[in-house]
Length: 88
Image (cartoon, rainbow, N blue to C red; front, side):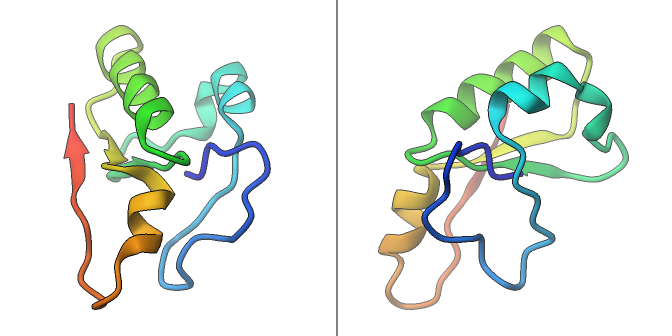
């Protein structure tokens, strides 16, 4: 789930990608599947990490992860290797 308000580029075409800004997601947590791994994406990873922590620790989720370093880190990848997502 891409949390950025106005993403300048969409996620990778191979992703099962949703764009739901953070405030919209928080307003309707039922949008989040609980039966699959969900990776949150923000510009630099901080917002995604904070939200993943909130959802897992205070809202009973156990499947929420975040893209470490966010889209900035993803876009720096030159050799096609994947970067890590972090579990809380």
